Length: 117
Image (tube, rainbow, N blue to C red):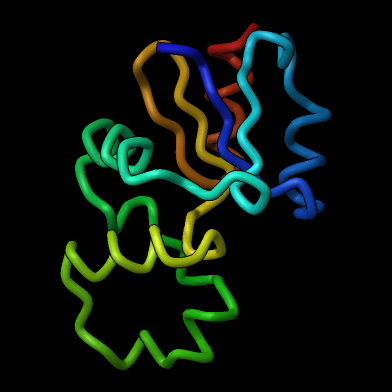
């Protein structure tokens, strides 16, 4: 399994994180806008993370505009939304040596940098 980063090329936060990475040439880059997630890729992430909810971003504009915070979402709903639109993926997502790192939290990115060093 290749080490990958799922990101959005137009996202300033993603770009800043990518610039800070050591050995980023060891990663396969996957821009989720240009190349939407496949069900197989999402399944791989699901297996590693334990849930679709863990991969889901509540910061997405669509989350607010669809009023999802006032709905009870099940795992099947999270999966459907993640496959439906790239903004629902909590970015960036790294898969490195069979481990998953989700989101742009400082602790998470520090862990990714450590693993890549």
